[in-house]
Length: 166
Image (cartoon, rainbow, N blue to C red):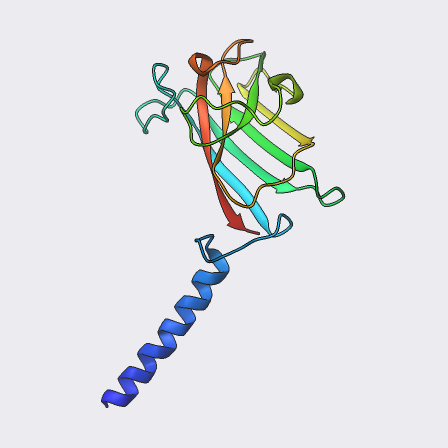
């Protein structure tokens, strides 16, 4: 009975390890840009620190996703959907290294990122391809700026991006 239980346990462990290796981006897993996908939820920030706020404030929300451009491996395709109480406005945004609230410099000038046009419903979407190879390590986030300014003090929402296997 002991040998059978141990064999079943070993088999279960092997299945779990195979699943984790396929669905994890831990230190032992290396992905190529064509295998990687970065994504994160857009959440409101604390205007004083730039840190992402909890569920208490739901003024702005959405989703961001980055994948390698299939035709040009040195480019990244970015999809953003946004919901905001503001209507009929233009929203600036940028891809920035490090974590939300760190005040990092965007990977390209802010004007290189097509603005998000928010319609009368308060929803906006943008899909852009930028001349930036999809990273396979590090940490990145998307800053969503208020008005037409793009400083850390003007960040109204942020998406912490996590890398996944496609």
